[in-house]
Length: 79
Image (tube, rainbow, N blue to C red; front, side, top):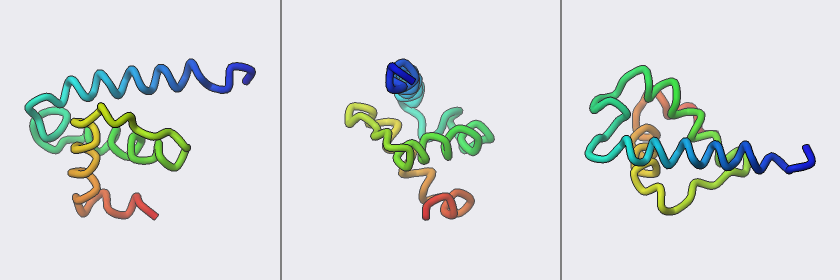
């Protein structure tokens, strides 16, 4: 696209900022590991493969991703 995907990137980053706020005081999206983490987490993890780096200020999202990556059920996502 002519815009280079910038509107989509802005939307992704806005969504991740929302998730970062939602993770305040929580280890997972709904206090405990649920299907929401299973469904949404891998998509966030794969952003790096798409060349989209998580902003450093998304501290809670980064910590959540680290927790997800340590779970046996999600360890096979990384190559």
